[in-house]
Length: 473
Image 1 (tube, one colour):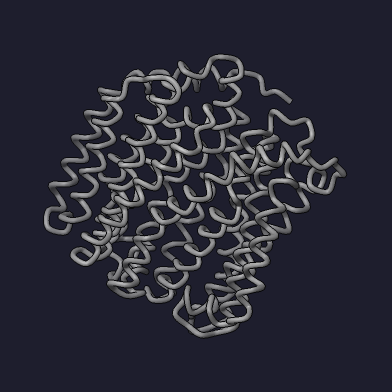
Image 2 (tube, one colour):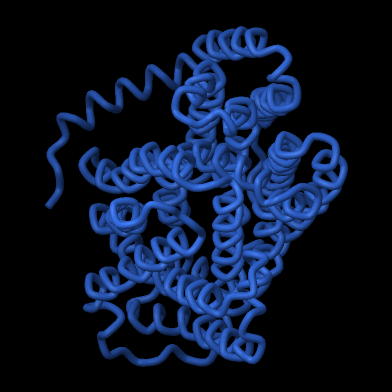
C-alpha cells in the first residue's frame, strides 16, 4: 500500500484523536462526573449491541469479501439477520418503556429510552456501511465516516453551550444521537451504489458457511464486551456515577491510542488474508508483529513521561486521571498487538479457539475487577482491564502458534508484560511516587530505543521510499 492510501486511512483515527483532545476537556469542564458517567453507560450499551447483534457476520464479510464476486449480495446477507434481530429486541423492549433508560442511566425517563434506542440502531447500521468503504479501500471516505460522529458531537455541544446556561444529561444524549444518526445518513448516501444495487441472494450453502464462521464469534463478542465494559459496571456497583465519570475521562484520553489500533485493524486483516493467498503470510506476520510491538512500547513510554500534562487540561476533580491513563492505554495497545500475533487463528478459520481465548481472558477480568475495584476504585478498574488484555494477548499468540505457524515469542512477552506491569503499578501507586514513575518510563523509552532500533531504521527507510513512490489512481 502506497503512502497516499495509507495516509487516507490514517486520517480517520488521527483526526478523531485530535477532535477528542478538544471534546474531552470541554465535557469535563461543562458537565458533572455524574453525567459523564451516565453517558459512558450509553457507550457500553452501543458496544454490546454491535458485538452481539452483528452475529459475527461483520467479520465474516471482511473475511469473505475477496472471495465473492457478488459483494452486494454478501453485504445484504451479512447485515440483514442482525438488524432484524436488533429491531425485534428493541420493539419487545418497548413493552417496558423505561427499562432501557433505567438500565443505562438509572433514570426512568421515556425520552432517554427512545434516544438510546435510536443511537443503538444507527450505530449498528453505520458499522456495516463503513465496512463497504473499508473493503473497497476508499480510505478518505472511510476516515470521514470515523470523523463525522466526533465532529457532529462537538458542533452540537457547541450549539448547546451557546444556547443554555445549565448543562445536563439530556444535552449530552441529544448530541450523541444527532451525531450518530447524521453519520448513518451520510454513509448510506456514500455507499448507495453498493447496498442499493440489485444482486442475487447468496445460496443457502453460502449463507450457512457465513453463519458457521460468525456465530461462534457471538460468545467471543460477549466476552470481549465484558472485558471492555465490566470495569464500568463494577465501578457503578461498588462506587458511583461520579467515579465512573472520572474513569471515563481517563479512558477517553487513552482512546488516542486507538490511532494505532484503528489503522492497524483496518489494514491488517485484509492484507494478511491477501498475503496468505499468495503464500507470504508467515514471514510477513512475524515481521509486522515486531514493528507493532515497537510501536506499543514507545507509546506506553511516551504516555508515561507526559501524563502529567492532563493536570493542565482538566478541572481539579479529574486530576487523578493522569495516573490511571497508563493502565487505560493497555486495552487499545495490547489488543492491537494481539491482532498481529493472533491473526493466524483467522487465517486458519479457528474461530472456536479465538472465542475460548476471549472467554478465558474475561474470566480473568471478572476475578481481577472483583478484587481490585472495591479496594482501589477507578485505578483498580483500569488495572484489572490492563491485566486481562495481557492474558488475551498471551492466549491468542499461543493458540495461533499451535493452530497455524510456530513463532518466537519471548521478546513479545517480556516487553508487553513489562509495560503492563509498570502501567498497573503507576495506576495504583502513582499518586504516592509520581517522580519515580516518570523516571521509570524514561528508562523504558531509552531501553526501547536501543532494542527496537531496527524497526526505527526500517520505518525511516520506508517513509523515504514511499514518499517518492507515485500514487496509483
